[in-house]
Length: 307
Image (tube, one colour):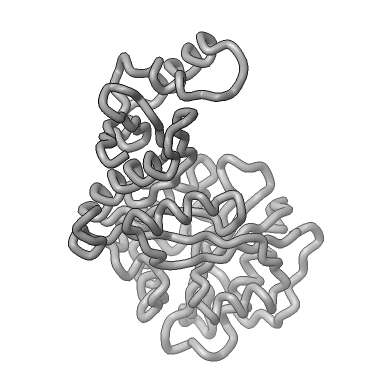
């Protein structure tokens, strides 16, 4: 099906979207629910809902979501009954690749069997794996750190944002896996506060001191949308203090802080190449629960003249 054309979903085309459903039930009720769902999504990106056409016939759809402006997740790829699913999927994937290669948008997927069709689609249409992340969890009920902690701690609320951000930026220096190196630190800090949402509390984010000198930072945070579940937004040690095991102490101290605030489940992640952080997870008793792959879109010339 070489003539497949992909277009963003337009107002009035909602029946075409619902017409591809193969699930039993009241199609009219599904259409009404879908239209209501779209109405709730102000400023919807046109790449979130895509339709594929062969001539004048709608033959497939793709639903995705922007997790932020540079990260996209594919929720569903569906083709009409009796058509070549791979051809439809490839047309949809190629449409995304052409857009994302210009905007440097990555596509996130989980590394698990049910995501294999998405992995194959991305590989066929000019995406390559850029990085991988592991996810870990730990039950924090009754947690007590196993490491001796030589630090005293001062919160963001006491230090103030300029000084805190300066220490945090220095702690990220030379860390190839920390995005703060590639972005404006103030913008990155604002994004972290926005992600913390209603649960942001400046008394939680802390700087560790040794003999009155700042060693590093830890940002324990409860998720705004998940009760009693949290993470450490960032753990970093200033370059001159590295190689002394302080990272594991800061991580364990952050876990203990969360536990003391009533958080019972920790979720963390890091790049699979970040071996020091992977070791910290192991030493501090975290269990690996999954892995994510991040695909980047090749430029058109790199992906081949036929794509």
